[in-house]
Image (cartoon, rainbow, N blue to C red):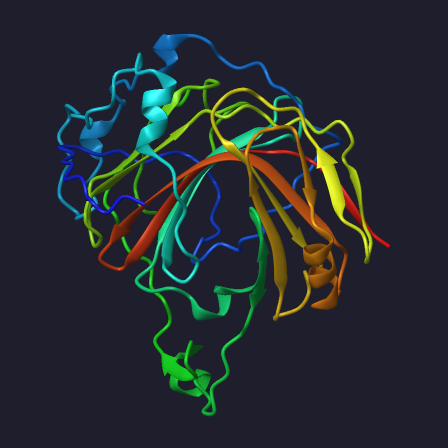
Length: 346
């Protein structure tokens, strides 16, 4: 995790397109459902010029995040030279936020549904961690951890006071969205420049893959209610899984395979057996991109023993991750390409 904050200045701003309206107040670790019958490798644009940020029509009609008028000529933040070697660029990103500290998450994500898949950018930052979404460690072995969500309990009725029950059994104000100013994402196949809309930053106007494979990606926030920062990632390859029907059984380990990319990123697997319960739990493994892994029986049994309620769910994706510490907590940035797998519990 990087603790130094970059001071970036935007002389003008414009908003990103899109229609996604859901707030990522504190995103669920298990992510979203993935559609499609299998991983689709899209045609990835190769024109380097498509990665360059261009002037946006109508900039003179826009306003800064603080309400001031924007200049017609737009100065964009510096971006690392596109010929930086991948191994050097990779040194600039690396760690995720601790769950108990994460107040913000930005994602550039691709999912393998439809012909080219769908991609988008979204993110939000709040003034505090939402206590009921904090996952506590219930077991760990190797690169895998068993996490349990514990909903806080308060003696008094916090809702009657217009508050929420927070960690430690105390009533606390509801979390509030914070502005980080204008957010620019460099290195994608089209310019992305976003302003806060409601509680969320978003741009869903991509046709297929949002990045070039192996490309350097940087998110820069100009600063607002939260100080300025920048975060880095890389264009990971879509995740192909030859045998995507997994079976989880008590008393047995779980082995699964995928096609390694040889490029940037790790593979993250999340298994949930309690989708419809408030006290949910997840088995999460963050793996090197080797193509095969076996989750040990101690953890698969531990997951089942914590309870089953609702259909089993598995989320798997290749991703890079970076994070930065700001005054209100930790902000995380992921570039992720989701795969498709189904899970049967026996």
